[in-house]
Image (cartoon, rainbow, N blue to C red):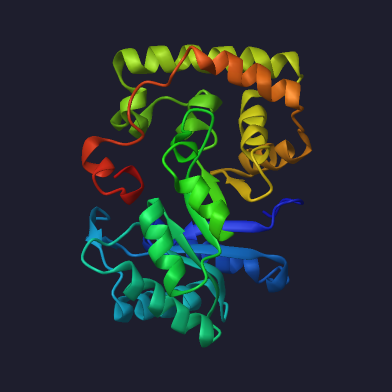
Length: 283
């Protein structure tokens, strides 16, 4: 089901081991392809049981991954193509250079990056034009404001696709299931972080919006170069996400939110320690 007001589809060729691309391809057949922006991640390598076993962003692997993605999506190009994470065994210049060749060939419109630090961003941008960085950015994950990543993007004219606006579900009241693997959803960390969410929910209610709407609107208010992207499993969730487009936060609203967060720093890392070590953005 397609919701009015939504034009960006963010996905990865490893989501559902390609099944997600097939679902998107079926939906695209009912739309004008040029009305939709497809942002596609690649590079994660899966075992037959679906478990993650590493990254591969060598040029041949990139070309092979895109060939299968285009087939599953039923399109002749993707709008943004990006490695899901930095492959430590492949220089970023080599990865970006391979995508640049695909841009020249017409299979890719723009080059993106994901979860990389400012030094890697600069090296990539020196190789070929970079359009977008995808990275976690939310009311509870504001590291890019301080570690030079956001500054580098703005200096180089690179947009930001911000994922995690709902704090991995915390702002939507979802704390169970696989979230238990994340430090922010464990023990005392969770209790503390839920208190922060409750405070923000009160601010949202005073403005007659939901906490998810407030959280998404806050990300959107951080600059025209930042676009929030939110994962959804149902049509109802998609509709709720799109409804945040109508929420506008004033300077006073933003000041109230910042004041509420000033004395309540989030507890726990974004990911488990073994995953944090894979993030170039955290080095």
